[in-house]
Amino acid sequence: GNFMELLKNKILTDGIVNDEEVLKVDNFLNHQIDVTLLNEIGKEFKRRFSDVKVDKILTVESSGIAIAVIAAQYFDNVPVVFAKKQESRNLDPEIYKSKVYSFTKNKEYEIMVSKRYISKGEKVLIMDDFLAKGGAALGMIDVIEQAGAELVGVGIVIEKSYQDGSAILEEKGVRVESLARIESLKDKTIRFK
Ligand code: G4P
Ligand code: NA
Ligand code: NA
Image 1 (cartoon, helix red, strand yellow):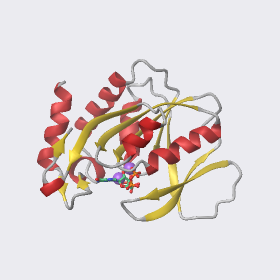
Image 2 (cartoon, helix red, strand yellow; image 1 turned 135 degrees about the vertical axis):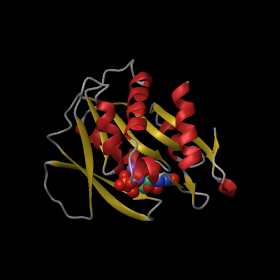
Image 3 (cartoon, helix red, strand yellow; image 1 turned 90 degrees about the vertical axis):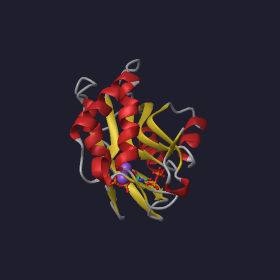
Image 4 (cartoon, helix red, strand yellow; image 1 turned 120 degrees about the vertical axis):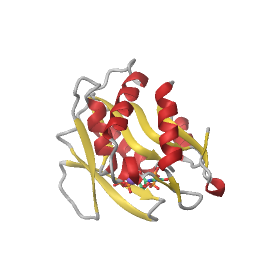
């Protein structure tokens, strides 16, 4: 609809392609935040997931937080939980942990969520800014499974469809709703699917 065109235009006008892998959107999503646009993103996620019950939204720090918080207002103000990242050695048994490999940064890190904040049977919607190779999403799904909670879907602002993440999630039977889907960044040109 109209919003999808707005988001695509924003990506085309403000997005910067540094190489063929990474799209920089610091101007509205990853550094400076366009609140009006984020608000529309929140509404669109609600529209896409209006058919499912959502008890909680799960994201990972840092860029996911603003998106999840603004969107939560359209999901009856459900709580937002963000997975924390840390280097190592937290032996607290009250924490769910999962190892995530970041392809962008070429290193492994852990995400952690306190057992207090995800409970058995809860219906959890994952949100994030980007879906690349799926590392962050798979880590969050692992946490949801450890908790015995139920994944209802994954909401992504920008999916890079030419990387593996979306295919891996679909293969697992995960419902992914991506607001913008990029087919290619070849020749420093942004092409949508
Ligand atoms: P993956 O989770 O899908 O496997 O991707 P990857 O490990 O490569 O992602 C690592 C970080 O880079 C994530 O943010 C992710 O959102 C971001 N990212 C991936 N591809 C792009 C891209 O093309 N452009 C931009 N701007 N970001 C991308 P993060 O490092 O965990 O941190 P934060 O920004 O949320 O703090
Ligand atoms: Na992110
Ligand atoms: Na990011």
